[in-house]
Figure: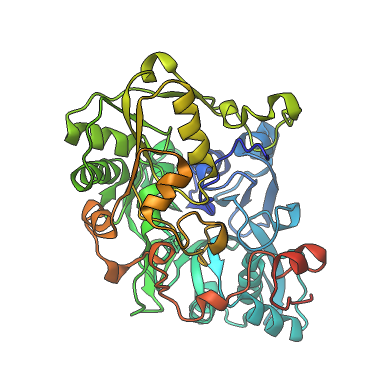
Amino acid sequence: MNVSTTREGPRDECGVFGLYGPGHDVSRLSYFALYALQHRGQESAGIAAADRGGHIVTRRELGLVSQVFSENDLRTLAGELAIGHVRYSTTGSNAWENSQPVQRSEGTNGSRREVALAHNGNLINALELHEELAERGVTFSSTSDSEIIAAMIATHPAERVEDAIADVLPRLRGAFSIVAMTKDRVVAFRDPHGLRPLAIGVLDPSPDEPDGVARYCVASESCAFDIIGARFLRDVEPGEVVTLGADGLQSSIVAPGGRRAFCVFEYIYFARPDSRMNGQVLQVARGRMGEILWREAPVEADLVIAVPDSGNPAARGLARAAGLPQDDGFVKNRYVARTFIQPGQELRKHGLRMKFNPLPDVIAGKRLVVVDDSIVRGNTTRQIVQMLRDAGAAEIHMRISAPPIKHPCHYGIDMSTREEMIAHGRTTEEIAAELGCDSLHYLSLAGVYEAVRGNRTTHCDACFTGDYPLAGSETAAGKYSLEDGERGEQEHPVPLARV
Ligand code: SF4
């Protein structure tokens, strides 16, 4: 048995941040913004910064934000504008070369264009674009799709970077929320479907500001604004290019009219509950999911508990609707890192206890409603149910604030293969039997949309329905498709690009 102390659920993809802020300590603000976005990626972190007209300096490394940057790094990254990134790999493996921001410096029109770029999402036509650039003699130092985008912008002949982006954007297919910078401006843009989030914030004025122009920032989630004293202004629109520079904020829609397809899973699980997306504060929307779960599947019970932490808001909503008491059924160890000393044979059977320790005094003899946000393969849920049984629970009724996950994501979320998903080819009753619980109910898709005040026409829900909003998604190459060697060949049956 492999012991995993990290969630087996879908993995967050990446978080991005950008700021044009003369008069502000831009690298320090970026550092704290990335801290707030750490839940979106824990494999690597990076910041690129520049003085207007100077060179771009980048510091990126594998590890958490707190491990990657020293006080000295932040001093070296001094400047007037900066972008930042936290990564969970979706295309390309977890290697230093694939950490971001990626930086490219190319000659165009007799001058050099220096671009740094941070990407959240996943291109479904990365192989095609890669081959096209390789034929033009462009070489790459990474195997991530993000460097392809950076190379397309850096090598574009247009004088203004915004014009280069306006030409490149419609050629990219898939999910992308991108923050790029040159030596004198930050440019943020979002795919025409708006699959992944991207928001604009405005900074409180600094006493050191040399002019009266407002300073703006962009981030994957609005929680990054709160930590640096910025205010949420609005979401970047699908297909919109936003420039933050000496003239404040400039915007143009360069790819209008795409089928909107915002990831409905962001509301359920990925984003932080204190973030705001499409007018919804997620803590509140998740509370409504719990209320609707109870309405859809009430049960005789004594106590509501959550699988911490992501099940907490829905558990509160469910307990409120049910009029049942709620308590902590587990204590969570918040200090279990991704890499840790393997427990060895003697401790192996305790598995998940490294992360969740049940509280028998709370649980024993109770008929429990246990709330979690999602189930992918079911291994963690099965162990949680067993731990609760061992702690003396009389009955266990699982309530999941998402529909059954049956299809992989091709837009930047790392999930298991279809065959590994417990809901693939099984009824809810069969899944309940597999998990060992007394009853199981998944929130209906209609319930999700009721909770988030949205509808299917403007969202992606393909991992639940198989209804992919972009044609060709299912034949897109996978995470290691731009890599040479054994790893890619073993994991992907499709022919791989050789760089
Ligand atoms: S497939 Fe699922 S996780 Fe991926 S973008 Fe669509 S809703 Fe989000």
